[in-house]
Image (cartoon, rainbow, N blue to C red; front, side, top):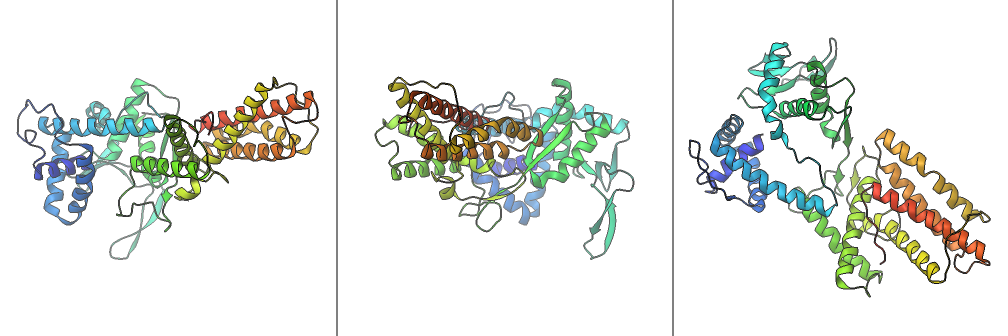
Length: 436
């Protein structure tokens, strides 16, 4: 896309693309001329310059079109961009315990483009519009009010046509998204495809999905956009760094890990553990804080980023749930040391009843989360279990209960609460430590 054109021109202007800008088939340097730090630095500079310098913008557009048309030197340079970026992605996602079966990007759908464009033209779906080529996706009579530059208001198709080829001859986001659907149809033939992307892209995906249905690349209703809200700063706008840039995932993880170490020391947790185990716990606490903060909010809503609040061991936070899990593990270990094992559960106290009823709601919470595509329902249940267990623990002594059967019953309730907490947190991608 245009971002790659911007980077190619910016690298050339800074002398970082020597050996790649020449005409011909190469050979081209095998070693990357850029690092991730270079790309991080150059892209915002190039994007800003393109808004002010029309000549620079046009050079970037030309580079984009030549890249897409297969210019060998540009393709070789772009391959290095991809490799450098992918390694960073694998590292960051690895820290979140996330991996993918396929590491496909937009470009992996490129081989489908000629066939797709020919098909769209042959079926009459791809039409010219003011020098560009588009697919009209609005149904007859579907319109919306559109305000023009002169202040007048007209009726326009809703949603607008999907831009497939720009007037400069470049493929657009919609083009590669559509080609990806065709590629997936051939390779995977999925019954359902879920697109987990920012809510602000809703109209784009409506255009793409409608085009895919019209072209026969997917069955009506088999493509679903799961839009999510944004992580905002105190001003209520999408979070930025102090310098005004987008916060990198690497920086977010590092900030959270630093804060986790600080909070653990403040709470006198893990001070007596070996340094390596303490670091492992700090990392788990950090990831729990980040993931739970994000997934405990309804998917479609935005929330304010507040690392101090997310990292608290009290309240509705990931660290609080980890603390409760570790607390139960400690209780079960002490019971085992005394020769006690969980036994048959019988309910005698209100707090026992409350915990049992809370545990009973787990299946419904998971089913609702799946049906509604709303992970926060699992997060809500995990928090309710932690709260119910805390009340139960305070009201119903376990290891000093009056008789053996009561001890074993309450141990069994505790073990059930732990199992549910760990399953719920695992569904949210959060790992619990053995101790703190």
